[in-house]
Image 1 (cartoon, helix red, strand yellow):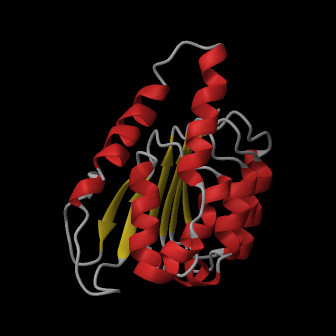
Image 2 (cartoon, rainbow, N blue to C red):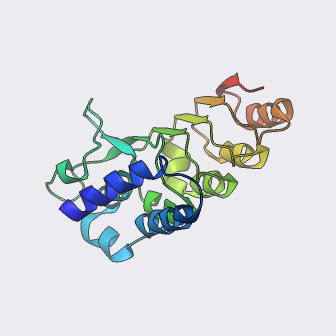
Length: 199
């Protein structure tokens, strides 16, 4: 367990590393942290396995019925299978990437997702997230900020989150036609409130 804690700290420091040869190493390490262990998901349930993945990658989770954000891998609560359900994810400056998104399968109580300054988040991530049936029913609030690889295509995919109520978008240079993208989302989700801070 201590190794994982050390590894998580190392991932958080990766963004401080100078560009160059070490970039490939950090990309490889981040990919390792995003690898899905399907046996682990079966053993501990989707919420616990997803929490472990998210915290390994430097994100935080909030469990249903709790006000406090959980950010310490070694401090994850234990208890009966299914006791702790993820209600919110704050992936700010984390290294979550597409290959880890299978961890989101089976989350039934996830209402809020914050993707802020996530260098590995791209259209395929938003498309994958939007295809997960349980999330189509549960997600209500979403933030996508300073994710340079997100374009109009990824945002439009969010229309599949049929219970989405609030979407905040800011600093997304890959979004080229914000008016049309917003119109398409509003047409698909009439109850959705979209807050924009896009150039």
